[in-house]
Image (tube, rainbow, N blue to C red; front, side, top):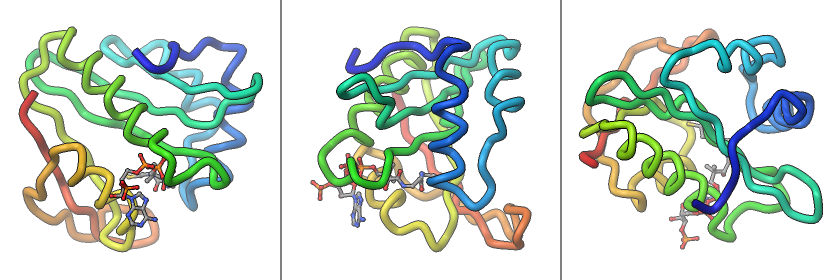
Length: 143
Ligand SMILES: CC(C)(COP(=O)(O)OP(=O)(O)OC[C@H]1O[C@@H](n2cnc3c(N)ncnc32)[C@H](O)[C@@H]1OP(=O)(O)O)[C@@H](O)C(=O)NCCC(=O)NCCS
């Protein structure tokens, strides 16, 4: 494993990164509620005592969903997104998932490239999936 699991002490920093990375960020409350979700696991990478990347996966029976993944802007394009994804896929596999899914904005080419590189392929489009009306591409890969 490249990173470590989230703890409650990490939530303020992760919430700040969510604000930095997304137009529809998870709030601190949503992040805190993830501890109550059976099958959810969050992981993060730290450098020089700072959280620079994080992600979360929800596993139920033999399927998993990548719920979030992000890298702080100045740390991108150096393999950290791939490292977080590898951790999330390992967790899902260890918890018995055989297949993993995710949604990505049609406009988010960098994330789509990451997912393709990590072995995902597109399944179908969810029209107006996001609150601002943008469509999502559902992607999947076998574990
Ligand atoms: C998507 C994201 C997590 C990628 O993180 P990262 O640390 O830059 O990813 P990596 O360095 O591991 O890149 C892996 C591959 O993804 C692709 N990729 C990543 N960023 C890219 C970009 N801006 N343009 C084109 N391809 C890109 C490349 O194929 C890259 O491999 P390469 O560098 O060998 O060419 C990061 O851009 C991010 O946090 N974006 C904002 C949050 C977000 O959109 N999250 C996904 C929500 S669905």
